[in-house]
Length: 77
Image 1 (cartoon, helix red, strand yellow):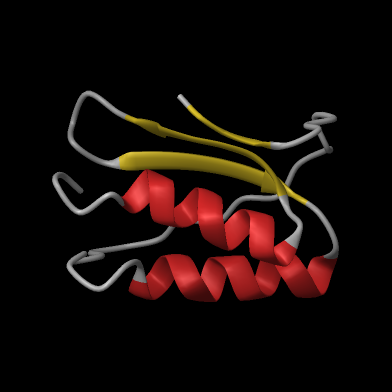
Image 2 (image 1 turned 60 degrees about the horizontal axis):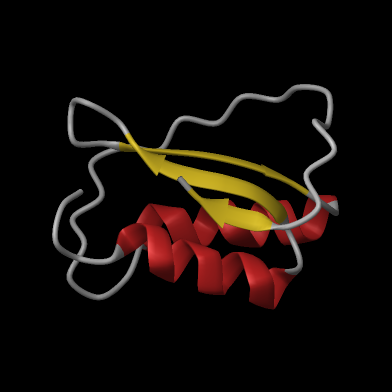
């Protein structure tokens, strides 16, 4: 995802849903996102990621579960 402000839009969505974590660009052009929060908010965030911001073309979203990392906010890396 390049040139569509995906990470910034993800940050805005995360703040709206009150989930915490980070989004960063990967070397292959993808975006890696780690979030934690209430289950309903996480489901809504994943649903948003499957669409992304208006100019995005999302090819796939991979979801894995793990122990919370203790993020206090959502950051862009």
